[in-house]
Structures are given as C-alpha cells and as structure tokens.
Length: 159
Image 1 (tube, rainbow, N blue to C red):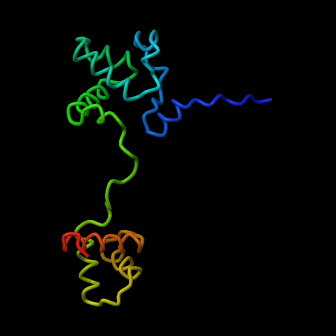
Image 2: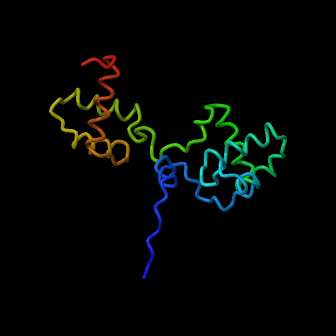
Image 3: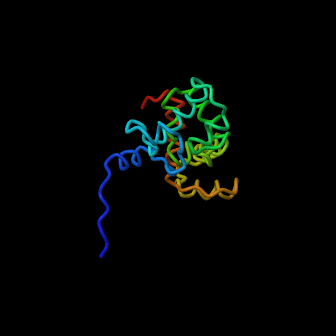
C-alpha cells in the first residue's frame, strides 16, 4: 500500500513561482542546516546568500559557490543579476521564446508588402509565401498577430 505524500504548501508556492531549488541537498552551508529561517529549497534565498557571503562575508567565490551548491560561473551570473535587477534578478525567467523570433522585421515587411499588393491574400497564403521566400514555417495565426502588431506600431497603437 502506497502512502500519500503530505502536501507541502511552501514547496508548491516555490514551484509555482519557478523558485524551487532543484538541488536543495547540494546546499552545504552551515546556516541552511542550523536555522529554520534559511530554506535550501528557496532558490532565490540560496543564491542571494551565496552572493552576500562573498560580498559581505569576504568568502572566496569558489568556496561560497561550492557551499551553496553552485559553480563559479553560476555565482558570477547571480552576482550580475543582483547588480542589474536587485533581488528580483534572481528569479528565473519564464521559459520559452521572448518574442516572435521567426517573424523578423524583414519577414513582416514581406507579408505586409504581399498583402498590400493583393489585399485579398489570406494569412494562410501569407504563411505559405513566407515558407517559400524564407524557408521558415510559421502558423497563419502568428502571421496575423505579427501584422496586427506591425499595424499598431505604425499607428502608435491607436485603432
């Protein structure tokens, strides 16, 4: 008979915010083992304390990174994130593309020009033309959204 695992609201909250440390067992820092305040599952807290240990505590980067379960490059990345964005810089970015990476300005200009030459051209046909011209596959809905964004940017967002 399998036992139900007890629900852990903090772990769930950390996971939902993408800040659950995937390797809490790698954190060997003394404070994380001896204090209820420090939680090795909290990725932001672990990285912040690692950076603080070097900057305020004077620990060598290599030793601090090892004690907190990270590599030297990870330390420097965390330190740069704190310098650039403060504590919020330690929250991992959402996964996935940040923008329409296939629909470059050149591709959108091509689609706009094609549509201007023949206003009856469907977005499905525009997607086919883009595939023929640029060798990339894009969904017709993506083409439609790109044309709307392009139109809105040209008109200053006004309808």
